[in-house]
Length: 138
Image 1 (cartoon, rainbow, N blue to C red):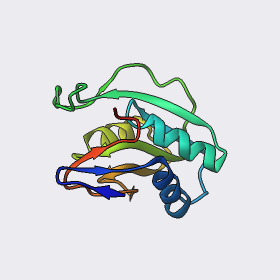
Image 2 (image 1 turned 30 degrees about the vertical axis):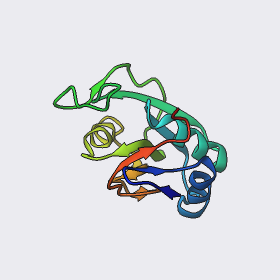
Image 3 (image 1 turned 180 degrees about the horizontal axis):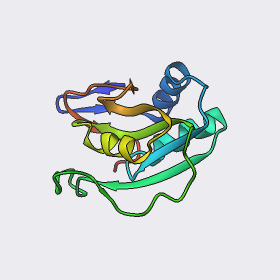
Image 4 (image 1 turned 90 degrees about the horizontal axis):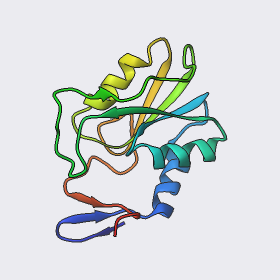
């Protein structure tokens, strides 16, 4: 991980190493919060060889500014999750509002939350104290 004055750089190799080290293999599925949780969700699902589903929640705009008081479910949940052991992924969890809303929607299952950085059961690189420069950023 390279540090500069105002950002923290995270590579995909570093992310995969953290996933291999920190993520247990006792789950039935990964549920990724769209959009930010899709990449870590995909990497974890592939590593554990379990299904990946997506839940479409929105709290912030593309500039990362909060635009709602609470996350909004943009599309109905169209997968079976009852009694499943779920890894719930997002890129960053600062307030926990989006993961909290997902927990309420995904009732009657066991959920472990994972964020690349921030407040989660498993935080791969966090909490962070400066902006993160993602590997996919220009």
